Amino acid sequence: MESRNQDLDILDFMDWIKSIFYKILAAINFIFVFSIFRWKYIFLYILGGFCFSCLFYYLQVPTYVSQITISHTSGGFDNYYCPELINSLNSAIDNKSNEDLSEKLDISNVSCVKRIQFLSISKNFSKNYKDSSLNEVPFKIEIDVSDRKIIGELSASIISYLNNNQYLMMKKGIEIATLEKRVGMIDEKISQLNILKDLIDKNISPQLSGSGLIWGSPMNPVVVYQLIISLTKEKLEILEKMKLGKSFYLVLVSSNSISSKISLFKIIIIGVILSYIIGFVSIYIYGSFYKKNI
Image (cartoon, rainbow, N blue to C red; front, side):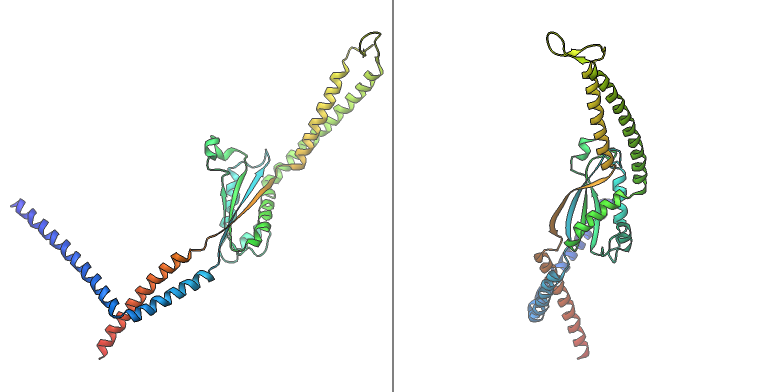
C-alpha cells in the first residue's frame, strides 16, 4: 500500500509539472498571438521607448572618476587614521547640496561631488606589509564628480583638510619645538668646535720633511673638521624636516575621465523591453475594458 501511495504521489507531481508547463506554453502562445494581431500599436510603444531611451542617454549627467595620490612624512598619521579621515568626508556627502562637506573642506559648490573613497597604493599592499594600517606609506583617494573642473580645487582642499587636523597640528607643534632645541644645541656645538678649530689652526706649522703636520697640539684637526661637517649636515636635515613637517603632500592627480554613463545599447534594450511590457499591458487592459462596455 505504501509503495502504491508513493507511486500515486509521483504521478500527481508529474501531472502538476505538466499542467504548469502547458500553462506557460499557453501564456507564451497568447502573448505571441496577441502581439502579432496588435503589432502596430505595440510597435508605436516600442518606438516611443527607443526614442525616450536615446533622449535619456544624452541627457544623463556623467560621473567622472579621478584618483589623487597622497604622500605623508614620517611621524604623522599612519594609514590606520587616514581612512577614517577620508571616510568622514564621504559620510558628509548627501548627494544634494553637500553642505557638511563644504564646511569641512572650506570650499563652495561641492554639490557635484558624489563619492570620496580611500584606496591603498596598490593591490599588493597587504602583501608588502604585515600590518598595512600601521605603515606611513602613500595612499590614493578616489573621487567621483559630475564636474571635472572642480577636481583641482577639491584635491587641494582635501590636502588642506588633512594637514589642518587638530591632532596632527598638535604633533607638528611638539616636534617643531623639539627640533628647534636640537638646532640650538647643534649651533652651540659648532660654535665651540670653531673656537677649537681656530686654536688648532694657529698651532699648525710645516714639518722639516714630508707633508705638513700638527706641531704643539695633541689633537688631529681632521677630526674637528669632520665633526663640524657632520653637525652642519645634521642641522640642514633638521631644517628640511622642520620645513616639511608632518604634512600631507599631493603627489599626483590622475583624471581618468571615465564616465559612468550607462551605455547606449543597455539603455535602448531596457527601454525597448519596458515599453513592450507597458504597451502589451495597456493594450490588453484597454481591449478588455472596451469589450465590457460594448
